[in-house]
Image 1 (cartoon, helix red, strand yellow):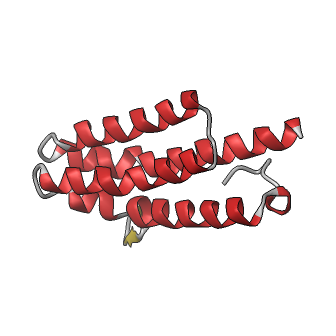
Image 2 (tube, rainbow, N blue to C red):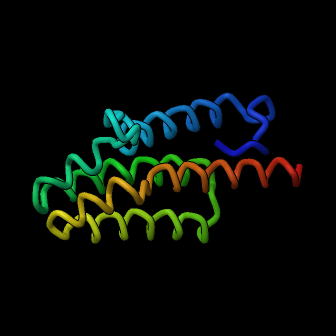
Length: 127
């Protein structure tokens, strides 16, 4: 979460969208803690175990965050960065075994929520 983001300055619509995107990112990137190593993974790396269909499903779920950001009028440049994060995650996830490890580390969804938070925080500074 961006420290510069004042939740009180956001509209109820923005707060609700941010809550949904954070929840989705957590589900996809950090839902389960791996005991002993204290590392969190989500559905995204688990889905990538299934060749092609798992990565496609992960990409579709990841695009939800991008769609929410677009509804909040994130600039095209930021939207493109978000799409690139999803594309890299999907392409890398397609590599057997290594792709699953990349999915567990890259955490594209958390990156995309951070981009959304940065946009909202920057917009606050302008207002």
